[in-house]
Amino acid sequence: MNDATKRSIVRWIHVIFAIPILGYIYSPFDKLPGYAFRTRYIFLPVMVLSGLWMWKGHVLRRLISKRSA
Image (cartoon, rainbow, N blue to C red; front, side, top):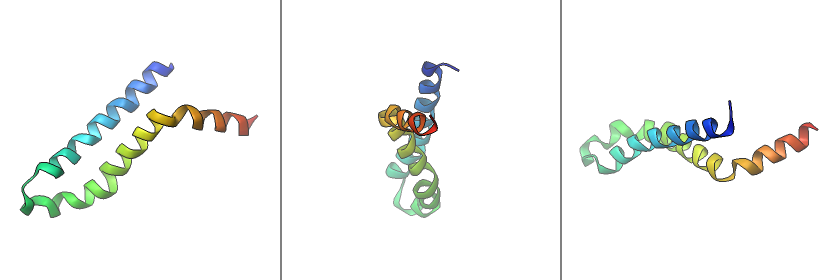
């Protein structure tokens, strides 16, 4: 798998996991408790990690490759 395909997959994961967060923000106040757990502990961490990977993933890959050598 080439780098462009990996970037595209991570980008789509980031976008797909951002959609429920937008629904959480704009949902009526009485429905928030139903979304709170999934949003806080599943959607938000996955979105943050994928965003960090897109932003600084090249640094992490370089550090991992130096340690394995």
